[in-house]
Amino acid sequence: MKILKVILCVLVFIVFFGVYIFNISGNISNNAIEGFKLPRIPASSSKVDVHLLKTGYITVPEAFSMAQGSLFKPFEMVHGAVLVKHGSSSFLFDTGLGKQIDKQFHLDMPFWSKPFMTYKKSTPAVDLIKNNPNLPLPNRIFLSHSHWDHASGLVDFPQANVWISSQEFDYLKTAKPPSVFPSQVNSKSIMWHSYQLNDGAYAGFDRSFDIFNDGSAVIVELSGHSPGSVGLFVNDKFGIRRFFIGDVVWNLSALDNLKRKSWAASLLLDHNENTTDNTILKLKALKDKNPDLKIIPAHDLSAWK
Ligand SMILES: [Zn+2]
Image (tube, rainbow, N blue to C red):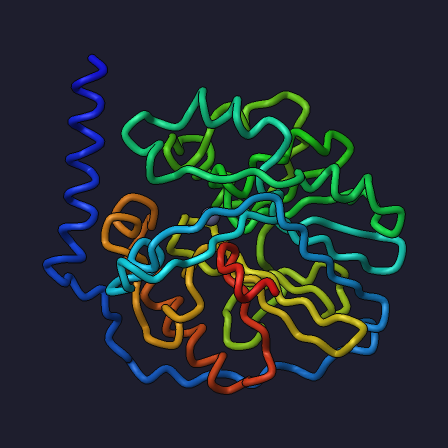
């Protein structure tokens, strides 16, 4: 049995890197989408602080993160959570790797994908917050999407309401490993809330949800990687404009070069390739139109620095 498992892992490995050797492009054709100018920074942003909490790392070949990346150039991936403070309120966008990640991974990650989905733990978000007297425990958590590396820490925040787009909530009912872990999302202690993105268009995205109703933190629909994936715009008190885009791309260079994830990662993890392609085109157009906007993929450590 062990031999069979090793053979299957080797086969997956060969397919994965064979794609590199046979140079499958992963190019996205440019449909010349017009980018939108961001709205003005609202006055309420003076109340907003953003903290990036790094909960884990892994170094992989660039070829894993992006189609036609180099096999020999390292790419540093981060797993993390974003804490947004808005006056006396606060929320977390994603949770990164939580306190129980090893147990969750052991229980739910299929054996054949374990070698490709490995991670190196750092400090879980809940401990980073508790160890810093300036950081509040969030009363809400929003998820970019429900995959295991974003939802692992949900159970560490039993006091928080967990908000998820209604499309992602529907997906969660049938989703399975290696994307979604039952050990993370089935806990009775999680207080789920689903929401609709009914606040109109924002920055070229048709549907949005304005978290504080003042334009300082706005969620937009970024479906493709999962059916209900979302991104988060945050305007902070220093005038920095960030856009957390979840897993639309893993590597920011993929946006500039209009590339998908590596073939195997895209096949395995992107729910709808065409919709993901369209979202990538939209993000590239937005980036070109707003050069001051910091676009931050969930796993590109260089964009987190
Ligand atoms: Zn991810």
